[in-house]
Figure 1 (cartoon, rainbow, N blue to C red):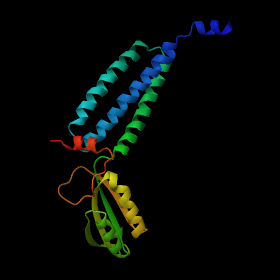
Figure 2 (spheres, rainbow, N blue to C red):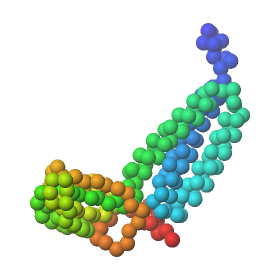
Figure 3 (cartoon, rainbow, N blue to C red):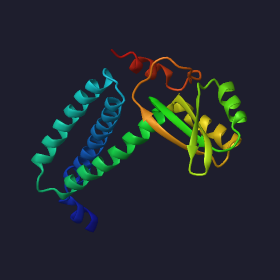
Figure 4 (cartoon, rainbow, N blue to C red):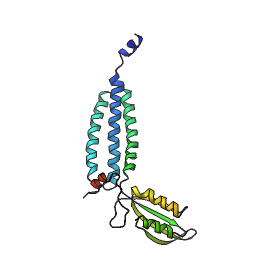
Length: 197
């Protein structure tokens, strides 16, 4: 009886249902926004406009609900939590998709013949340049690879030249070159996205 009295006046929709709806919607639109930005910076032209359309449509619906409930603090908290979680989720999805190319620069002052052979055997194109480091002559080894193959390259580096300095950086595009085989993981999505004008 006491429970009925205390819960009779509680508006479940305004304080639980609506904030949950706002959180989920904001999660979706911010995730799409994050993916759209990442794809745009990588030079993809077909998918970002579609993501932007869905993102803005969701945003308009959600902002309409928030404006109707300006006196509801739970809506504000749901909005902020959805935004934060959407950013995180968007970055996680982008990392899992592993789209694009990266350049790996390796600098070593040790014998690197085994490393070069291992990279070639893994079908990675390489360019080797003689250089001068702070402690004497060094070899600079460059390779461009799909992001999904970077973990294999770093494993080869650590196996054959432990302690070598290397850096990894995103690149927008490249032409020609030798690349290791395609992974079946998400290949259909990547093939669709890569067919850009």
